[in-house]
Image 1 (cartoon, one colour):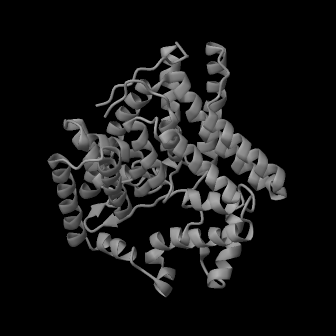
Image 2 (cartoon, rainbow, N blue to C red; image 1 turned 120 degrees about the vertical axis):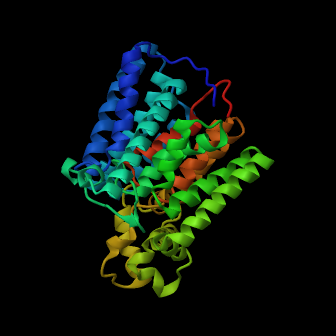
Length: 399
């Protein structure tokens, strides 16, 4: 599947496994009780422990250039924007760095082989649970598919006669974020029963966004990374295309979601079109913020204030602005909060790595960019896992 040769600094195998599992648990439980508190608490604890173990076991205090660039960017933004010192902004700042550094030091401590191996095993376990959820729904066993008794907010949704599986995640889209890399690997590499389980679980999310994300990833991989379209690739894309068309034809709920992509004008204010409205409005409010503050933005962590202020300018008073998800599209938020300097810095560090990146690294960048279209949360472990995996230095890695 892939081969990675790396020298991890922490020798304690038990510690490495526990640290990796703890990170993935924090990712899985972002919907448990209070998403911000639980997720941030776990990754903050993990980040502190990993920093201590990494420095103690390795005595190598060198930090990658891209991390230093981000630190410098935040320092400049803090000095220029007085809003940065607001209590809410400081909380976002802590959440951002906890998520980013927990994965960064996890990779330094454990190495890529172990992280991806545990990721694969957990993805298989989650996929099996998703299949159990679907079967329990069809058989009427309520407690197996509606997990409100665990303290998870009930977001049970349906696609025709089927359940849109979520496992422990807040919604099918977030399950798709978790499963997209294992699904991609399962599709392009040799198939086995475990790969089939992951693919089935991914498609049982019945999420148009997830499906488009997978197709975009495959197209990006073949057209930009591989730079060739083989007969096998053509067959894979054709089969996936036929499956998607069939689902859209026979499941009206999916067809409605797909049609919402083309909604314009006043139709965007309808709740059924909010998946399109969310990124659309978020981009424009942050573009207005950028035009007013082109260099340094309005300040890191002020995204919600930007959204409320400029949304009124665009639409007037909106009765239910929360319908449009103000916390999506990572780069739109960076554009509004940190201005042109922040946006250019992010794209510079991506560009600087591209020529030296392996195929696997580039796949993770594609996934990060795709997920960033649907999530902008500074406490979303998915974003920072894919981001760090792009920059992770590997030897002998191939897909």
